[in-house]
Amino acid sequence: TQQDALRLGLVATESIRKEDELVASLPFYDTDGSGLALAPQLATKLVYKDKLPDGYDGWTGDVGLLAMLLLNEMARLNVDGSKGINLPTRKDGIPSLMSAWVTSLPSPEEMTNLHPFMWDEDDQEVLQSSSTKKIYRLLDDIEDDSSWLDENAWSLDRETFPETIKLQIGDSVEERQCFSTDGFRYAVSLVRSRSFFVDGSLRLLPYLDYANHDDFDSFELVGGGIGMLWGSAKGALLKSGKSLREGDEVCISYGPKGGADYLLDHGFVPPMCKASSSGGAVTSELTFEVDDTDRFRDDKLDILEYETYDLAPMEPTQVFDVTGGPPDPAMYQFLRLAKLGGKDAFLLESIFRKEVWGFMSEPVSEDNERKVVTTVIDACENALKEMDEISNESGSALSPKMQLCALVRESERQALDRTLEYVKQEAEALDLKEYYQERRLKNLGLDSDWSPEDDVSFGGTRVPGGADYDW
Image (cartoon, rainbow, N blue to C red; front, top):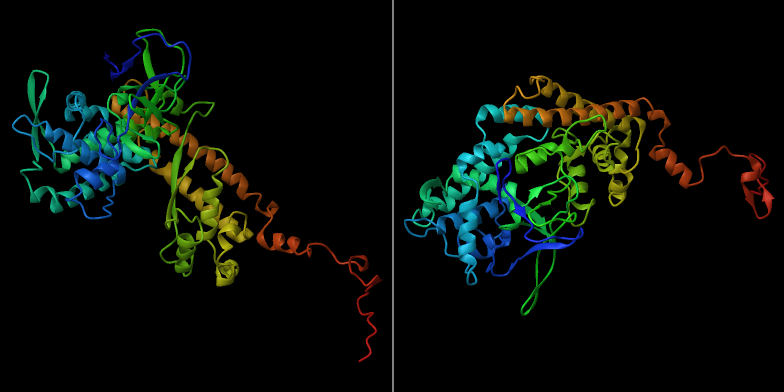
């Protein structure tokens, strides 16, 4: 169905009596891509197998790989003759469904109002200063990947990878950018707004992606088995969050995210992410790194790479969410290591190498802890200062895009203000924390004053200076 405010959506074709009931499903067919679903590995292992180097990993990650698959699907529909790579080969009836889905997607012109990646530069600049999650960084990733792809694949074979294509949209033919920087940015914006992380992978799920978001009475898409004529197959399952009548809209949850993530992914900010007296799902990001000038940098990078988490070594730059409550313990753990120095540097010795990351989960010393909280305070204050440079006007007088920026700004400001208040209170009570040396002495049983009764040997009591040795 099509609605003026939401463009496209799904409706129930029959009554659904209870929540958690299966409404729709879509098989993956990950190995050969013979169905509708698109997954990143289809780009590297099938469609672009001979065009990309082994281990290709662009800055845009799986989103970029799905965008390349989407561009290929568009090129295959070129009205002047199919372009792109004629893969994957699909089951009977699937190509027409794929064609209908591709041509139903928002046009580049529509996306200039629907997604920040397609906004004009002035509006993007306001969003850049309205959030700690920087849109320019994401746009740079898109440009870097598209430049590499153009130089190493697209420009080498323009017959296969044309810069523009023509699509039959309804009764008219529209020319659109395809294998170009603008085409790639358009495809990335579509993928970010329509993809779902299901069964361990980011995926494009045609037709299921028509489902709109609802903060309440809705579930995220999940993976599971789908009954087929010949058995079962893995796929995505859409379940109802409440009972529905025939004709009711079927909604899903796009997941727990902050306002900036919703805007940069889906192009809107849901009510649950708006600042309020109760807090809502307000979230902001803080970025920290091991200083390039740190004299112990090599030791710290070695610990982050080999002694933190076996399956996911940590990078020297880390991003953490702050929600206005107690800071993430992982953030403090990273910062304690990043700020380790002075009299605490002995913990970086090789004898502690296997244990030091665990030590960082608790306060090391008052000096180290003060550096940690000061770093967090400075990060919050700098982020708030940047937001102060943007007009704090809000309401209907603003354009729709500026209203979205204001919603994100207000939400993140609330998260930062509350985090700042919490950490400042913590900074005033550093003397009440228990630090490494105290914990170590306690573990050795050396944390109390000595008395004769504490030291008994062979049933006797030792008195200082009272030994009677026969030398």
